[in-house]
Image (cartoon, rainbow, N blue to C red; front, side, top):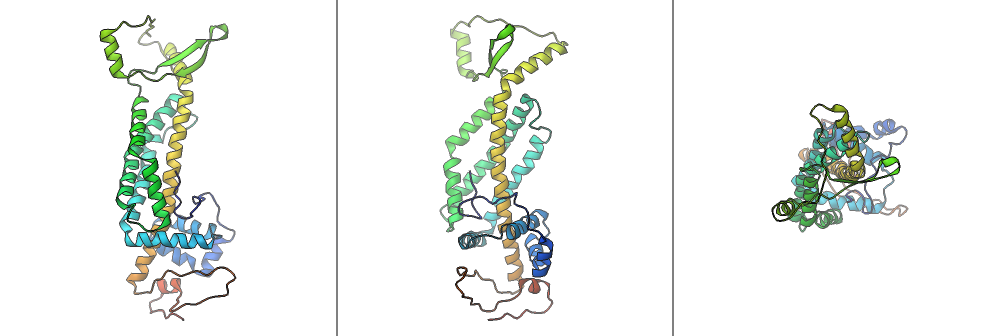
Length: 319
């Protein structure tokens, strides 16, 4: 899944560093005042608007027009922007709760458990995104939001969400972890494979109407810690590949919500700035940018935004 709210063809690069002397550039152009108004005291919004404006300064004309379209939609529906942002932020909070003590270097059983809990905790957030897409997909006008909501409806349809819910429930292993293994050299176990859990209904019917296949059972003594450790290691071998796949799926979901949170943070900064300017009686417009090298420049009532935000007197614009 791709967000594509800042660029029509790619997600915002959250790892791109700020340019050299970024702080000096901010002071020279008065951008520190502008960024502060956009952040409205929120440290993450401040970090994001700085990165979008300074680190992503080489945007094309098409990117500017694309963002203006999205911002127009959010200005008409500011609560939609905040609701999308709160949904992305909720995922981050749940990750802290579900994944905090689990790392990729933990045992496979722990990695699998943490990834399963995280995917389960994100299901209602994905359903919320789907609900917002159904409610607003046909009402927005910008290419960015129309594409985003179409992607959500397509990739987070009912069938997919139900399938994820089934997998999350199956990975709880309520009847134990079913593994298959063959004997290798020296009678050591080889080719550990996690088997699909048998359906509970089929298992009950087989217990009533059918005969069980011959099997051998070994039960550990209650305090045999050494044997329990061996069994845990065998289980980890069988869970290793599945744990890696579940962790990768959780990473994918996390990456989507993180990009969504950061791209929306820029637009929330724009909404904050718009509110500050309008409440101060200042003119706001969407400029029609000319192509580089066109030699055209025309404006009316153009004023210094940073000066207007800090001055006690009305700022007079220029034509």
